[in-house]
Length: 400
Image (cartoon, rainbow, N blue to C red; front, side, top):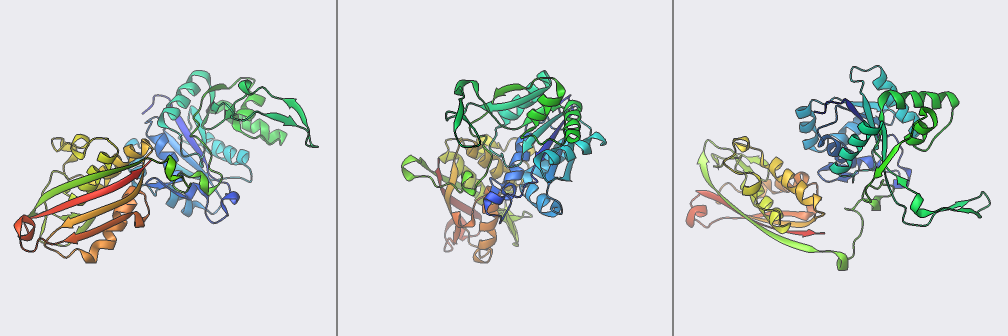
Protein backbone atom coordinates (compact mmCIF):
# COMPACT_ATOMS: atom_id res chain seq x y z
CA UNK A 1 0.00 0.00 0.00
CA UNK A 2 1.00 3.63 -0.39
CA UNK A 3 2.81 5.43 2.44
CA UNK A 4 0.45 8.36 1.89
CA UNK A 5 -3.16 7.92 2.99
CA UNK A 6 -5.34 8.35 -0.11
CA UNK A 7 -9.13 8.17 -0.25
CA UNK A 8 -11.14 7.78 -3.45
CA UNK A 9 -14.53 9.46 -3.74
CA UNK A 10 -16.63 8.12 -6.62
CA UNK A 11 -19.51 10.46 -7.42
CA UNK A 12 -22.51 8.42 -8.62
CA UNK A 13 -25.51 10.25 -7.19
CA UNK A 14 -26.94 11.69 -10.42
CA UNK A 15 -30.23 10.64 -11.99
CA UNK A 16 -28.85 9.81 -15.49
CA UNK A 17 -31.84 11.48 -17.16
CA UNK A 18 -30.09 11.59 -20.55
CA UNK A 19 -29.76 7.79 -20.45
CA UNK A 20 -33.54 7.50 -20.79
CA UNK A 21 -34.15 7.09 -17.07
CA UNK A 22 -34.32 3.27 -17.21
CA UNK A 23 -31.00 2.56 -15.53
CA UNK A 24 -28.29 4.73 -14.04
CA UNK A 25 -25.31 4.97 -16.35
CA UNK A 26 -22.95 3.92 -13.56
CA UNK A 27 -24.84 0.63 -13.29
CA UNK A 28 -24.76 -0.30 -16.99
CA UNK A 29 -22.85 -3.51 -17.82
CA UNK A 30 -19.21 -3.06 -18.80
CA UNK A 31 -16.26 -5.46 -18.94
CA UNK A 32 -16.76 -8.15 -16.29
CA UNK A 33 -19.13 -6.02 -14.22
CA UNK A 34 -20.55 -2.53 -14.50
CA UNK A 35 -19.36 0.99 -15.25
CA UNK A 36 -19.09 1.56 -11.49
CA UNK A 37 -17.12 -1.61 -10.74
CA UNK A 38 -14.77 -0.87 -13.66
CA UNK A 39 -13.99 2.55 -12.18
CA UNK A 40 -13.26 1.14 -8.73
CA UNK A 41 -11.10 -1.72 -10.01
CA UNK A 42 -8.94 0.59 -12.14
CA UNK A 43 -8.13 2.71 -9.09
CA UNK A 44 -7.54 -0.30 -6.81
CA UNK A 45 -5.13 -1.81 -9.32
CA UNK A 46 -2.76 1.06 -8.51
CA UNK A 47 -2.41 -0.49 -5.00
CA UNK A 48 -2.34 3.06 -3.62
CA UNK A 49 -5.95 3.61 -2.56
CA UNK A 50 -6.61 3.27 1.19
CA UNK A 51 -10.39 3.71 1.24
CA UNK A 52 -13.32 4.23 -1.14
CA UNK A 53 -16.55 6.13 -0.66
CA UNK A 54 -19.26 5.88 -3.30
CA UNK A 55 -21.71 8.78 -3.26
CA UNK A 56 -25.13 7.44 -4.23
CA UNK A 57 -28.76 8.42 -4.50
CA UNK A 58 -30.87 8.39 -1.33
CA UNK A 59 -32.46 4.97 -0.71
CA UNK A 60 -30.26 3.52 -3.45
CA UNK A 61 -27.70 1.57 -1.41
CA UNK A 62 -28.87 -1.92 -2.36
CA UNK A 63 -28.80 -1.14 -6.08
CA UNK A 64 -25.43 0.63 -5.76
CA UNK A 65 -23.83 -2.29 -3.91
CA UNK A 66 -25.13 -4.78 -6.46
CA UNK A 67 -23.56 -2.74 -9.29
CA UNK A 68 -20.34 -2.09 -7.37
CA UNK A 69 -19.66 -5.74 -6.53
CA UNK A 70 -20.84 -7.13 -9.89
CA UNK A 71 -17.25 -7.94 -10.89
CA UNK A 72 -16.06 -10.70 -8.53
CA UNK A 73 -12.45 -9.55 -8.98
CA UNK A 74 -13.28 -6.31 -7.20
CA UNK A 75 -14.26 -7.94 -3.93
CA UNK A 76 -11.11 -10.05 -4.02
CA UNK A 77 -8.95 -6.96 -4.59
CA UNK A 78 -10.65 -5.12 -1.73
CA UNK A 79 -9.95 -8.04 0.61
CA UNK A 80 -6.37 -8.34 -0.61
CA UNK A 81 -5.66 -4.66 0.06
CA UNK A 82 -7.95 -4.41 3.12
CA UNK A 83 -9.65 -1.31 1.70
CA UNK A 84 -12.89 -0.20 3.42
CA UNK A 85 -15.78 0.81 1.14
CA UNK A 86 -18.53 3.22 2.19
CA UNK A 87 -21.78 4.15 0.47
CA UNK A 88 -22.78 7.74 1.25
CA UNK A 89 -26.06 9.46 0.34
CA UNK A 90 -25.47 12.34 -2.05
CA UNK A 91 -27.11 15.73 -2.33
CA UNK A 92 -29.20 17.60 -4.84
CA UNK A 93 -26.06 18.83 -6.67
CA UNK A 94 -22.68 17.35 -7.45
CA UNK A 95 -21.03 19.90 -5.17
CA UNK A 96 -23.25 18.90 -2.27
CA UNK A 97 -22.59 15.21 -2.95
CA UNK A 98 -18.83 15.73 -2.82
CA UNK A 99 -19.18 17.72 0.40
CA UNK A 100 -21.16 14.88 1.99
CA UNK A 101 -18.29 12.48 1.31
CA UNK A 102 -15.66 14.94 2.55
CA UNK A 103 -17.69 15.60 5.69
CA UNK A 104 -17.96 11.85 6.29
CA UNK A 105 -14.18 11.46 6.13
CA UNK A 106 -13.63 14.44 8.43
CA UNK A 107 -14.88 12.43 11.41
CA UNK A 108 -13.86 8.98 10.19
CA UNK A 109 -11.10 6.69 11.43
CA UNK A 110 -10.09 6.52 7.75
CA UNK A 111 -9.55 10.27 7.46
CA UNK A 112 -7.05 10.60 4.59
CA UNK A 113 -4.16 12.88 3.83
CA UNK A 114 -5.14 13.15 0.17
CA UNK A 115 -8.38 12.61 -1.70
CA UNK A 116 -9.15 11.81 -5.34
CA UNK A 117 -12.61 12.81 -6.60
CA UNK A 118 -13.78 10.94 -9.68
CA UNK A 119 -16.96 10.81 -11.75
CA UNK A 120 -18.58 7.40 -11.49
CA UNK A 121 -19.46 7.61 -15.18
CA UNK A 122 -15.82 7.86 -16.34
CA UNK A 123 -14.76 4.20 -16.58
CA UNK A 124 -12.29 4.41 -19.46
CA UNK A 125 -9.31 5.96 -17.67
CA UNK A 126 -6.11 3.94 -17.49
CA UNK A 127 -4.11 2.84 -14.46
CA UNK A 128 -1.36 5.12 -15.80
CA UNK A 129 -3.67 8.11 -15.41
CA UNK A 130 -4.56 7.05 -11.86
CA UNK A 131 -0.88 6.88 -10.94
CA UNK A 132 -0.18 10.24 -12.57
CA UNK A 133 -3.04 11.79 -10.60
CA UNK A 134 -1.68 10.46 -7.32
CA UNK A 135 1.88 11.52 -8.06
CA UNK A 136 0.91 15.06 -9.09
CA UNK A 137 -1.50 15.51 -6.20
CA UNK A 138 1.17 14.52 -3.67
CA UNK A 139 3.74 16.72 -5.41
CA UNK A 140 1.63 19.86 -5.93
CA UNK A 141 -1.20 19.56 -3.39
CA UNK A 142 -3.87 19.77 -6.10
CA UNK A 143 -3.97 18.35 -9.62
CA UNK A 144 -6.35 17.68 -12.51
CA UNK A 145 -5.98 15.86 -15.86
CA UNK A 146 -6.98 17.80 -18.95
CA UNK A 147 -6.96 17.53 -22.74
CA UNK A 148 -6.83 20.12 -25.50
CA UNK A 149 -10.27 20.95 -26.94
CA UNK A 150 -10.79 19.71 -30.49
CA UNK A 151 -13.09 22.51 -31.64
CA UNK A 152 -12.43 26.24 -31.65
CA UNK A 153 -14.03 27.84 -28.59
CA UNK A 154 -16.10 31.05 -28.50
CA UNK A 155 -17.60 33.08 -25.67
CA UNK A 156 -21.22 33.96 -26.43
CA UNK A 157 -23.47 36.57 -24.79
CA UNK A 158 -27.05 35.87 -23.56
CA UNK A 159 -28.43 37.05 -26.91
CA UNK A 160 -26.43 34.42 -28.78
CA UNK A 161 -23.69 36.62 -30.29
CA UNK A 162 -19.95 35.95 -30.10
CA UNK A 163 -18.27 38.39 -27.73
CA UNK A 164 -14.82 36.83 -27.52
CA UNK A 165 -12.74 34.51 -29.71
CA UNK A 166 -10.82 32.20 -27.37
CA UNK A 167 -7.38 30.90 -28.30
CA UNK A 168 -7.70 27.13 -28.48
CA UNK A 169 -4.04 26.38 -27.68
CA UNK A 170 -4.45 28.17 -24.34
CA UNK A 171 -7.55 26.17 -23.34
CA UNK A 172 -7.93 22.83 -21.58
CA UNK A 173 -10.95 20.58 -21.03
CA UNK A 174 -10.56 19.21 -17.52
CA UNK A 175 -11.43 15.66 -16.49
CA UNK A 176 -11.38 13.61 -13.31
CA UNK A 177 -9.88 12.34 -11.04
CA UNK A 178 -9.23 15.67 -9.38
CA UNK A 179 -6.83 15.30 -6.47
CA UNK A 180 -6.32 17.47 -3.39
CA UNK A 181 -4.87 17.65 0.06
CA UNK A 182 -7.86 16.52 2.07
CA UNK A 183 -7.74 19.28 4.68
CA UNK A 184 -7.57 21.98 2.00
CA UNK A 185 -10.41 20.80 -0.22
CA UNK A 186 -12.60 20.20 2.86
CA UNK A 187 -11.99 23.77 4.00
CA UNK A 188 -12.77 25.11 0.51
CA UNK A 189 -16.04 23.19 0.28
CA UNK A 190 -17.09 24.46 3.70
CA UNK A 191 -16.43 28.03 2.59
CA UNK A 192 -18.39 27.52 -0.63
CA UNK A 193 -21.37 26.29 1.43
CA UNK A 194 -21.24 29.44 3.54
CA UNK A 195 -21.35 31.58 0.41
CA UNK A 196 -24.11 29.39 -1.06
CA UNK A 197 -22.37 29.47 -4.45
CA UNK A 198 -22.50 26.50 -6.82
CA UNK A 199 -19.38 25.66 -8.83
CA UNK A 200 -19.01 23.37 -11.83
CA UNK A 201 -16.15 21.29 -10.46
CA UNK A 202 -13.87 20.89 -7.46
CA UNK A 203 -10.89 22.73 -8.94
CA UNK A 204 -13.04 25.86 -9.15
CA UNK A 205 -13.95 25.50 -5.47
CA UNK A 206 -10.30 24.94 -4.61
CA UNK A 207 -8.97 27.88 -6.63
CA UNK A 208 -11.61 30.22 -5.22
CA UNK A 209 -10.99 29.55 -1.53
CA UNK A 210 -7.51 28.05 -1.07
CA UNK A 211 -5.49 30.91 -2.52
CA UNK A 212 -3.44 28.27 -4.37
CA UNK A 213 -3.28 26.97 -7.90
CA UNK A 214 -4.15 23.55 -9.32
CA UNK A 215 -1.54 21.73 -11.38
CA UNK A 216 -2.80 20.55 -14.79
CA UNK A 217 -1.30 17.42 -16.34
CA UNK A 218 -2.03 15.51 -19.54
CA UNK A 219 -5.33 13.65 -19.47
CA UNK A 220 -6.54 10.96 -21.85
CA UNK A 221 -8.85 11.35 -24.83
CA UNK A 222 -10.45 8.02 -23.89
CA UNK A 223 -11.33 9.30 -20.40
CA UNK A 224 -14.76 10.52 -21.46
CA UNK A 225 -17.76 10.86 -19.20
CA UNK A 226 -20.64 8.64 -20.29
CA UNK A 227 -23.66 10.79 -21.12
CA UNK A 228 -25.61 8.59 -23.53
CA UNK A 229 -25.81 4.80 -23.92
CA UNK A 230 -23.93 5.12 -27.20
CA UNK A 231 -20.88 6.39 -25.28
CA UNK A 232 -20.22 2.81 -24.15
CA UNK A 233 -18.13 0.95 -26.76
CA UNK A 234 -20.17 -2.24 -26.43
CA UNK A 235 -23.27 -0.27 -27.45
CA UNK A 236 -21.70 2.05 -29.99
CA UNK A 237 -22.22 0.94 -33.58
CA UNK A 238 -18.98 0.52 -35.48
CA UNK A 239 -18.72 0.21 -39.25
CA UNK A 240 -17.27 -3.05 -40.57
CA UNK A 241 -14.89 -1.11 -42.80
CA UNK A 242 -13.11 0.33 -39.75
CA UNK A 243 -13.02 -2.91 -37.76
CA UNK A 244 -10.25 -5.50 -37.56
CA UNK A 245 -11.29 -9.10 -36.95
CA UNK A 246 -9.08 -11.83 -35.45
CA UNK A 247 -9.84 -15.53 -34.99
CA UNK A 248 -8.37 -17.87 -32.41
CA UNK A 249 -8.34 -21.63 -31.79
CA UNK A 250 -7.97 -23.26 -28.39
CA UNK A 251 -7.55 -26.91 -27.43
CA UNK A 252 -7.22 -28.82 -24.18
CA UNK A 253 -7.39 -32.43 -22.99
CA UNK A 254 -7.47 -33.80 -19.45
CA UNK A 255 -7.55 -37.30 -18.04
CA UNK A 256 -10.62 -38.19 -16.01
CA UNK A 257 -9.69 -39.65 -12.62
CA UNK A 258 -11.41 -40.46 -9.36
CA UNK A 259 -11.38 -38.09 -6.37
CA UNK A 260 -11.47 -34.99 -8.61
CA UNK A 261 -14.38 -32.65 -9.38
CA UNK A 262 -15.73 -32.53 -12.93
CA UNK A 263 -15.81 -28.82 -13.75
CA UNK A 264 -17.01 -27.73 -17.16
CA UNK A 265 -17.07 -24.03 -18.04
CA UNK A 266 -17.03 -23.05 -14.36
CA UNK A 267 -19.92 -25.37 -13.44
CA UNK A 268 -19.39 -28.41 -11.21
CA UNK A 269 -21.20 -31.42 -12.72
CA UNK A 270 -21.98 -34.47 -10.56
CA UNK A 271 -19.94 -37.47 -11.72
CA UNK A 272 -17.68 -40.14 -10.23
CA UNK A 273 -14.64 -38.77 -12.05
CA UNK A 274 -13.14 -35.34 -12.61
CA UNK A 275 -10.34 -33.69 -14.60
CA UNK A 276 -6.78 -34.25 -13.50
CA UNK A 277 -4.79 -31.03 -13.60
CA UNK A 278 -2.61 -28.52 -11.76
CA UNK A 279 -5.51 -26.05 -11.50
CA UNK A 280 -9.14 -27.12 -11.18
CA UNK A 281 -8.72 -28.90 -14.54
CA UNK A 282 -11.52 -27.05 -16.34
CA UNK A 283 -10.60 -28.06 -19.89
CA UNK A 284 -13.35 -25.89 -21.40
CA UNK A 285 -12.10 -22.65 -19.88
CA UNK A 286 -8.49 -23.58 -20.63
CA UNK A 287 -9.35 -24.00 -24.32
CA UNK A 288 -11.31 -20.75 -24.31
CA UNK A 289 -8.40 -18.90 -22.69
CA UNK A 290 -5.99 -20.19 -25.34
CA UNK A 291 -8.36 -19.26 -28.17
CA UNK A 292 -8.75 -15.69 -26.92
CA UNK A 293 -5.05 -15.17 -26.17
CA UNK A 294 -4.11 -16.60 -29.57
CA UNK A 295 -6.50 -14.33 -31.44
CA UNK A 296 -5.05 -11.29 -29.66
CA UNK A 297 -1.45 -12.44 -30.23
CA UNK A 298 -0.99 -12.40 -26.45
CA UNK A 299 0.62 -15.76 -25.70
CA UNK A 300 -1.08 -18.84 -24.30
CA UNK A 301 -2.38 -20.20 -21.02
CA UNK A 302 0.96 -21.87 -20.23
CA UNK A 303 2.89 -18.61 -20.47
CA UNK A 304 0.30 -16.80 -18.34
CA UNK A 305 -0.26 -19.48 -15.70
CA UNK A 306 2.59 -22.04 -15.73
CA UNK A 307 1.78 -25.37 -14.08
CA UNK A 308 5.14 -25.16 -12.30
CA UNK A 309 3.89 -22.23 -10.20
CA UNK A 310 2.43 -23.40 -6.86
CA UNK A 311 0.07 -20.43 -6.64
CA UNK A 312 -2.01 -21.88 -9.48
CA UNK A 313 -2.50 -25.20 -7.70
CA UNK A 314 -6.25 -25.98 -7.78
CA UNK A 315 -6.86 -22.42 -9.09
CA UNK A 316 -10.35 -21.43 -10.24
CA UNK A 317 -10.11 -21.34 -14.04
CA UNK A 318 -12.79 -18.62 -14.18
CA UNK A 319 -10.34 -16.28 -12.46
CA UNK A 320 -7.54 -17.28 -14.82
CA UNK A 321 -9.75 -16.64 -17.86
CA UNK A 322 -10.96 -13.34 -16.44
CA UNK A 323 -7.38 -12.16 -15.88
CA UNK A 324 -6.30 -13.10 -19.41
CA UNK A 325 -9.45 -11.59 -20.96
CA UNK A 326 -8.86 -8.32 -19.13
CA UNK A 327 -5.40 -8.08 -20.73
CA UNK A 328 -6.89 -8.75 -24.16
CA UNK A 329 -9.53 -6.05 -23.64
CA UNK A 330 -6.80 -3.60 -22.68
CA UNK A 331 -5.54 -4.05 -26.24
CA UNK A 332 -8.91 -2.82 -27.51
CA UNK A 333 -10.47 -6.15 -28.46
CA UNK A 334 -14.05 -7.24 -27.82
CA UNK A 335 -15.61 -10.66 -28.27
CA UNK A 336 -17.91 -11.22 -31.24
CA UNK A 337 -18.56 -14.90 -30.65
CA UNK A 338 -17.18 -18.02 -29.01
CA UNK A 339 -17.95 -21.58 -30.15
CA UNK A 340 -16.94 -24.63 -28.10
CA UNK A 341 -17.04 -28.36 -28.80
CA UNK A 342 -16.68 -30.80 -25.88
CA UNK A 343 -15.76 -34.44 -26.52
CA UNK A 344 -17.03 -36.41 -23.52
CA UNK A 345 -18.56 -39.87 -23.27
CA UNK A 346 -20.20 -39.42 -19.85
CA UNK A 347 -22.05 -37.74 -18.22
CA UNK A 348 -24.62 -36.29 -20.62
CA UNK A 349 -23.81 -32.62 -21.12
CA UNK A 350 -27.10 -31.27 -22.52
CA UNK A 351 -28.84 -30.75 -19.12
CA UNK A 352 -26.01 -28.41 -18.08
CA UNK A 353 -25.48 -26.50 -21.31
CA UNK A 354 -27.42 -23.35 -20.41
CA UNK A 355 -25.66 -23.13 -17.03
CA UNK A 356 -22.27 -23.40 -18.71
CA UNK A 357 -23.13 -20.78 -21.33
CA UNK A 358 -24.26 -18.40 -18.59
CA UNK A 359 -21.12 -19.06 -16.54
CA UNK A 360 -18.77 -18.37 -19.44
CA UNK A 361 -20.65 -15.25 -20.58
CA UNK A 362 -20.62 -13.84 -17.04
CA UNK A 363 -16.90 -14.55 -16.67
CA UNK A 364 -16.20 -12.69 -19.91
CA UNK A 365 -18.79 -9.98 -19.27
CA UNK A 366 -20.56 -10.56 -22.60
CA UNK A 367 -24.09 -11.38 -23.73
CA UNK A 368 -25.05 -15.05 -23.61
CA UNK A 369 -25.84 -15.12 -27.33
CA UNK A 370 -22.11 -14.61 -28.03
CA UNK A 371 -21.26 -17.99 -26.46
CA UNK A 372 -22.30 -21.47 -27.58
CA UNK A 373 -21.28 -24.90 -26.33
CA UNK A 374 -22.10 -28.36 -27.65
CA UNK A 375 -20.87 -31.85 -26.78
CA UNK A 376 -20.12 -35.00 -28.73
CA UNK A 377 -19.40 -38.53 -27.51
CA UNK A 378 -16.52 -40.67 -28.70
CA UNK A 379 -18.89 -43.44 -29.87
CA UNK A 380 -17.04 -45.86 -27.54
CA UNK A 381 -13.83 -45.26 -29.52
CA UNK A 382 -10.46 -44.06 -28.24
CA UNK A 383 -9.67 -42.31 -24.95
CA UNK A 384 -12.84 -40.23 -25.08
CA UNK A 385 -15.08 -43.13 -26.02
CA UNK A 386 -13.66 -45.27 -23.22
CA UNK A 387 -14.36 -42.53 -20.65
CA UNK A 388 -10.69 -41.85 -19.93
CA UNK A 389 -10.59 -38.16 -20.82
CA UNK A 390 -12.36 -34.95 -21.80
CA UNK A 391 -11.24 -33.13 -24.94
CA UNK A 392 -12.23 -29.57 -25.90
CA UNK A 393 -11.92 -27.39 -28.99
CA UNK A 394 -12.78 -23.67 -28.91
CA UNK A 395 -12.83 -20.98 -31.59
CA UNK A 396 -13.40 -17.28 -31.09
CA UNK A 397 -13.79 -14.14 -33.16
CA UNK A 398 -12.45 -10.88 -31.75
CA UNK A 399 -12.95 -7.41 -33.19
CA UNK A 400 -11.05 -4.16 -32.71
